[in-house]
Amino acid sequence: MAGAGEVAWVLGIVAWYIIRYPFERRAKRVRVVSDRRSTAEAIGLGAALLGMSVVPAIYIATGIPQAADYPAHLWAIIVGCALFFSAMWFFRRTHKELGKNWSISLQIREKHELISGGPYTLVRHPMYTSFLLMALGQAFLLSNWVVGLAGLIGFAVLFFLRVDKEERMMLEIFGPRYQAYMDRTKRLIPYLY
Image 1: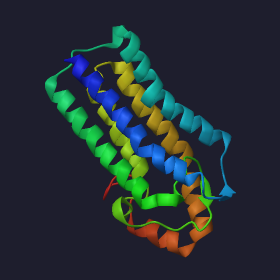
Image 2: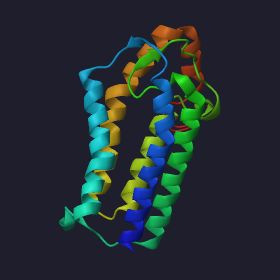
Image 3: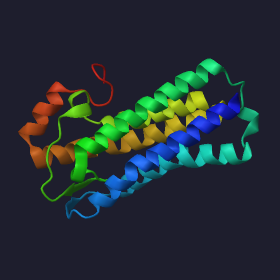
Image 4: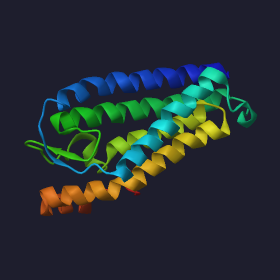
């Protein structure tokens, strides 16, 4: 049963990369006009990478840390797959809406636009929503306490080190338009937060 969860996680990560790659290539062609990358942001991105891909990949390849394993259940794998599928849907829609505005780091690109359609009508940061769903999916798919928590911790470090800075940057660039957008949307979870 645990093997099915591991296969689903690997397929989800492959889907994540397939979704991201063309947008990453396209975005590199658009000139950056403001770059707010920082050490804190690099730490957040590194924590997310570690918790949501490196730790689980090591676990799948080696079984380490086996002492933290618990029995896998079919219901957990189904929930994990549903969460991961939802994450990929949000992730794809977010990239599609952002188009050439997308950047892996805190950057403003030439002719940057304020995006408020698609998943951005529900929350201001749907890409982070997709990462949260991925981390939760990982916790259900990989029946290991350390690996499950690693994804959630990696997501939390990225989110809390970066989201305030991202919103300040958007307020500087878009002013009252972004403030009005903030007033009518939640950050991460529709209608809640």
